[in-house]
Image (cartoon, rainbow, N blue to C red; front, side, top):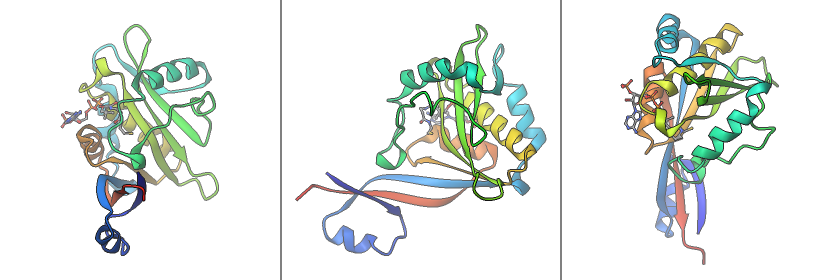
Length: 198
Ligand SMILES: CC(C)(COP(=O)(O)OP(=O)(O)OC[C@H]1O[C@@H](n2cnc3c(N)ncnc32)[C@H](O)[C@@H]1OP(=O)(O)O)[C@@H](O)C(=O)NCCC(=O)NCCS
């Protein structure tokens, strides 16, 4: 199967569809600019997360826990090539100044949710984009995705990041709702076109 990912309003789309390509998946991009960040609200979303859960930045000590949570959830990402999550290797699981991680830990200290964010390093450091966010299956629908994403926005905006981006599958109701709760505005629509190989 051949695939092409493009903006939904791409001029190429009509011709491709006329030639046998069809939409196999939809995805989106969304942005959160500094002027839309409601700090006190985001702080509440972090502090009032589920009982016994604490949220903090990830560091070198967390790499094994990051790899374990990643491998337990690697098959859970909806969508197609455009939103596929490649399993992390040790380097990808290690937070750095350009790749920041934020996690939520359960009452027994187990990592139960995490988000990784890439911070622009070749410009003025004012832009950041979420790589992925994931929550342990047993801990979903308790505000943990919102809490770790809120923690990332608060920490990075305190360091001067003013433009945040995120995205995902248009079929992913959970992450779409989480982004809306945080103030993200959907501003890009993408499609994945597929056609059987000749
Ligand atoms: C998507 C995901 C991260 C959401 O995590 P979560 O901790 O369950 O989300 P939250 O509890 O913070 O929920 C945020 C909002 O989304 C809603 N929500 C969560 N999952 C939902 C679902 N499956 N369907 C509809 N709404 C959902 C919640 O009710 C909440 O809305 P509210 O504040 O209005 O009540 C989690 O389902 C997951 O890990 N999925 C697999 C990986 C993935 O798809 N990651 C996102 C792409 S990078």
